[in-house]
Length: 274
Image (tube, rainbow, N blue to C red; front, side, top):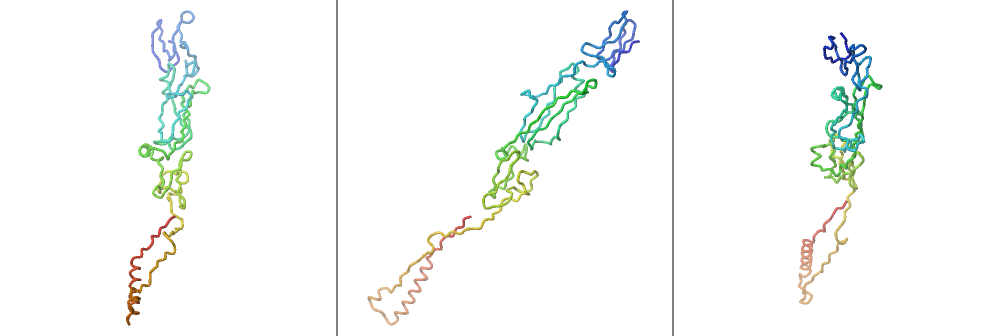
């Protein structure tokens, strides 16, 4: 009985001999037509692993539109694993040993930070040196302008990127590289953010909003001082002559006129401007 090396075997009878043929092996007639085992074309004999692939498998990235092994994403996108194609007649076997490793932990959901990371795809080829074949995908995450996002869309897909500025207090969103900040208006102080943020954008200090710190300035409308003129009226008494009680009546008439004018005086509007 001739035993050919290999793990997966097929039993055959040939010339009254029992052959156990290993994977990637064939039985050939040797000297004197004595059957023996040999490797298939494209395979070589290894002392430990039997007949092994003479050429390492060729891997190709899926979804590589520019052929530069680079995947370009933006903040707010979700990373999708596209895997690789293995171009080899033993592709199915190699895929079973495929390992995928990321250069940094992958976040759950959308990508919020700019930068890049790498994805390594490795298949084991223990009979080669090094004992593996590896292909690397580069993933770049580019900046977006948070101040110009479709707020309604991103509230659903990536709420972490939606600006949280205290707009009711006059805060304005200002884009930065990889993030954003909130800018308070003149004569106010604070970080410009709403409180309770789960992220830490540029300049965030707990969400103090914008507080007015200016001293009010009062402006009077109209001339200052406001001068009113009234006449000291004696009526036609000067023509008709004065009675004995004329002095008392004149005094009473004068007082009544002052009260009448005082009631008609309108107080000028006082405005405050900051």
